[in-house]
Length: 124
Ligand SMILES: [Zn+2]
Image 1 (cartoon, protein in one colour):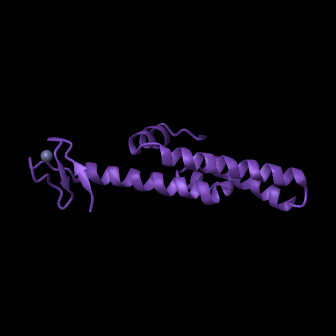
Image 2 (image 1 turned 90 degrees about the horizontal axis):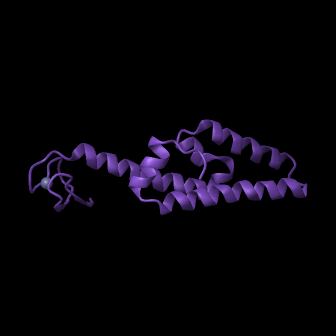
Image 3 (image 1 turned 90 degrees about the vertical axis):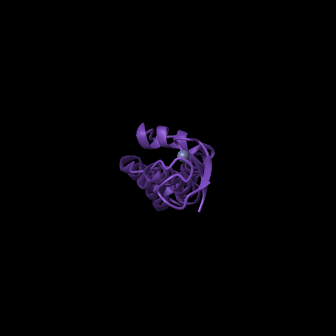
């Protein structure tokens, strides 16, 4: 359980039911929405850092085209793994994933929701 601020009376309380214990406002929907964004941001961030080079965080956020682009680049690099260029390009793609992951994790839930869920910003 987490403490949240009631969106109506702004008092802090522990989430136990769908009603605020101070003003009795129904808050469940809003709380669930916040928890969802919080989870999405954390999962997308860690996917980007750990397996970002194959675009997993893009697929997770529903950016399928961008995910496929990263996946194809990584696949081509894997095919030509013995060449220096392929290794450099793979490192760049992996770095993009890590940078995006760090960017996601450093945003607030509110910013993340606005930039990546509502406005669908595909890169960084
Ligand atoms: Zn309240």
